[in-house]
Amino acid sequence: MPVKDLATSDVVTVEPEDPVSEVARKLESESVGSVVVEKSGKALGVVTDRDLALDVVGDEEDASEVSAEEVMSDDLLTVDPDDTLVDAARTMQENAVRRLPVVDGKGDIHGIFTVDDMTATLADEQGMIADVLREQAEA
Image 1 (cartoon, rainbow, N blue to C red):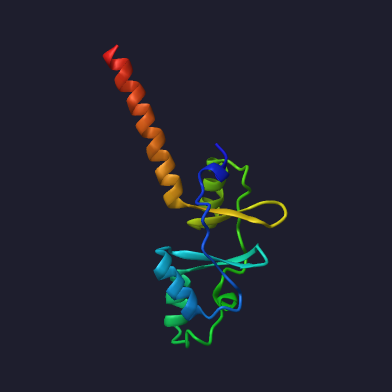
Image 2: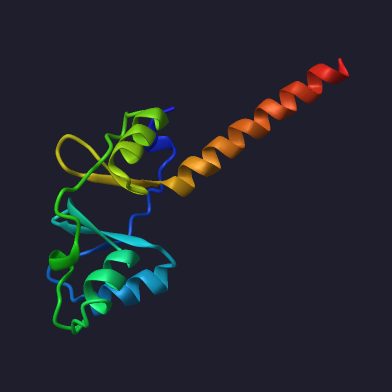
């Protein structure tokens, strides 16, 4: 199954120049752990709650003076909408990340695929397998 069918399509985004104080408010109001930094619909990076804790709070920076661009990931890792769950899992494992923006060849954002999305998908699959096994046992 392609990642585009498993990912969260409602991506929370911020602009590169947005202060991290605004990013933190957005993380809280949207109940998410990361935002995609984008400009004109193109993904530039990701800012996580961990980035804010370590790079802003930990360094005692003024959150109103630091921009999203200054704390976002420098090397944006993405997954193509047509990649599989296994492709995404491999990218996550090899790069020790928990979130991958779903971005096409033009750079357009189609969603975000997270470890939580993967876990939910695998749980659904296991549930379906369990149902089949129960039905077979009853037959």
